[in-house]
Image (cartoon, rainbow over all chains, first blue to last red):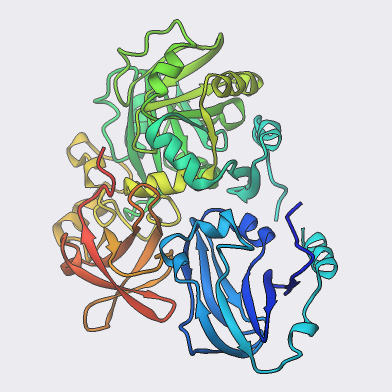
Length: 129
Length: 359
């Protein structure tokens, strides 16, 4: 069973979201990295870009497959994890830590509260498999 | 969709924690520990693949060699007994029905190893184009096949068999035993590494698999098989070759022996050779960031479409994005500059001389 921390929120597309002050940190879940296999390339937006909820903000590719990354909320990108460009394997090694992808200042302060909690995400993963 | 088949090693794959995917009508392992680890094991040590899904079509009886010679591009009559050859199985128009390996046992027995996805199509094609005796026999269900590949494969297999392996040259084979199990030991494979393909009865496949794993061969799935063959620019049927491409376009002219006598597709190939290929399958390295994938458009420097990507990946050995593409002949020379359309983002690529990984 994939690891699902209880202090994060999630999307149905397998992104996780960590609240940090009035910004949100976004990455992909342990379940997502495990399903993808060896991650070999990550493409992320630039600082200052706008992302919108439900729309793609980047891609993550394994040896075989391409997956789009979907923004959990609308807002402005305030930081991008440039380390992933040179070390995409971190997505497999530490999906909830070193492999965070972007920080976003959400357009709406309560967007976070509308996201899946760990129990709802666990149920989603269960029904997906 | 018809029900998926399982090889005799399915239970072994599940027990080893493989991720199973549908492939060519079979439930096959795509990876165990991870594609990159498996890939590196084959390049540096020994990997073990279940290739039992591949088909075996046998011609046996007087005239067997002539029958196969009439069906494929390579010179089967010119092989020694115990020698194998990679060849094209072509339509009368010169396109690939399949790419195959022909194992010549004797003047009266040839085994043709075919791609799993093409097994039935190949068999029907062979029936339709074989005049007289012997007729092809589909022995696919009578054979399991294990590929032991990597620089340490010879030592590992030798430790399990009394059959001397050192005299078996590349693309030759003998009938022998490994770990006490009768099998055909062929020095063939599709990874670019030294190693063997072991053809055995389905009943002994599990025993053989387990002994090879115990001896240190790492189970490898289809994912690593794909990255390994791509690093060598070996064609994958359905991606890089198909009925709409001939051996000259595919860079497989070396498999065509026009002067050996008549064979299916020969007339078309003579005409194609005289006309010259309009496009060629090239190897390219992406010069920017991203991963090329099958179906992506290839553009020239002015942005005009000049071809399509047939295979692509991030090379685990080179750690660079590599691929194969059909491009207009004028751009096929190594050093030519292309652009690959990565989902709307054109990225520069350079045509290189294959293989990507020099052994």
